[in-house]
Amino acid sequence: MKPDGTKILVVDDEIGYRRVLNNALTERGFYVKTSASGDEALEELKKQEYPIVIIDMKLPGGIDGLELLQRIKGMYNASVLIMTAYGGIETAVEAMRRGAFNYITKPFNLDEIILNIDRLIEQQKILDENKYLHSELEKVYGLKKIVGSSREIQKVLDMISRVAFSSATVLITGESGTGKELVARAIHFTGNRKDRKFVAINCATLSESLLESELFGHIKGAFTGAIKDKKGLFEEADGGALFMDEIGDIPKSIQAKLLRVLQEGEFISLGDTVTKKVDVRIIAATNQDLMQRVQEKEFREDLYYRLNVINIKMPPLRERKEDIPLLVKHFIEKYNKKENRHIKGISPEVEKEFYQYHWPGNVRELENVIERAIALTQEDIISENVILPLVKKEGSLEAKECDLLSQPYKEARRNALDAFNVKYIINILNKNRGNVTNAAKESGIERQYLQRMLKRYNVKSKDIF
Image 1 (tube, one colour):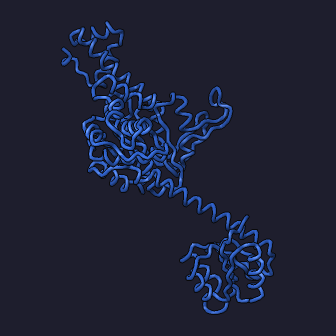
Image 2 (image 1 turned 120 degrees about the vertical axis):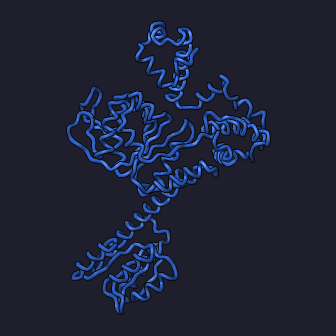
Image 3 (image 1 turned 90 degrees about the vertical axis):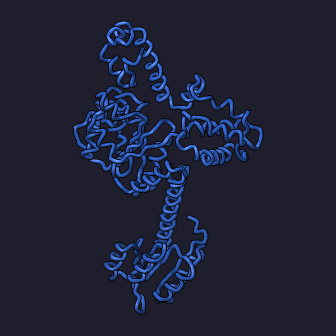
């Protein structure tokens, strides 16, 4: 490994050893300083930073090698290599317990010292990369990524700060496109589990059998196609967090297994008989009314209360329109960088249009509009003639279709089906003057199922005609 001028401080009271190490390490490209005592070493460390310090255990004066090690580890970001005579190995082992990287016996082998220094540099490089990655993750997923100064969004930020260091389960509710996953990531990467995995799954995009396998894993032969053991997401997220988006769509058969994980911290993989223990923080999200799903007997009540320990409600964009200028600025900067553009902002007419628009697709829709506008505009200011074709008026068929097209497929399909179901049952009930039995017969829908649909969509037969 290239030393790249890495600074090394050698602390030894014997001048012969200091000279040998100084010459050998300098020849290999290291920057070396030597000290004859613990006091001298501490003075040198005050002047400049040394990533690596080599210390002889026996030093003259009031500061021996063990005490010098403790002071360095307590005050400086340095890795320490210990040198000791053969009879001092017990003390050297104690030094390693207190944070020394390794020990070398005297008389030493220069190749062994170089090997240890190379390992120290590699270790420091990995630690530095990890620190950088964590800082980048905090930039990408931390609180700063949640843009807004409105009272509503400040409440969300305050709640994130309060719950981040807890292990309590969090349920994030709100309409599609409000930023629920962003909040989940901010909770994780702000808290004390940020060094562990954040694993995400959308419960609405997988079939029942596949979802169960993804969450809990399976063993070889558990089902046709299970050609080898597979670790589930609960195991993957052990020690960290599992984000379960669209939790309202989880099948009832899996709800029972999820409840067991929440209650006991344990589960059994598909096809297995062995119980596995995990420590996972669950953060769930939904755009559905889970209590209504409970009343419809589609969602377990005990699971609902286990999930809803802490509730964070994401406000729709129409309730925090004062955040629009900040969000627009944020998205313009994001897509300027991505597309190598230099758009300065939006025109006053566009800003007025944005304030008047209802934003059914919420922040996701706003981001989509800005991204498309940057791709289409030829000016340095986004004008009204670019924006108007992208923003469909609330209530129009185009607006609803535009909103659906900006959503994930599973979500869009469900929302389109919900809209169709409401129109259909209202129409069939109108034809039958609110008589549910006759409407069920004419439509071919079982009466009990039609009653559930009425309840789910809050359609009252007595108000139909």
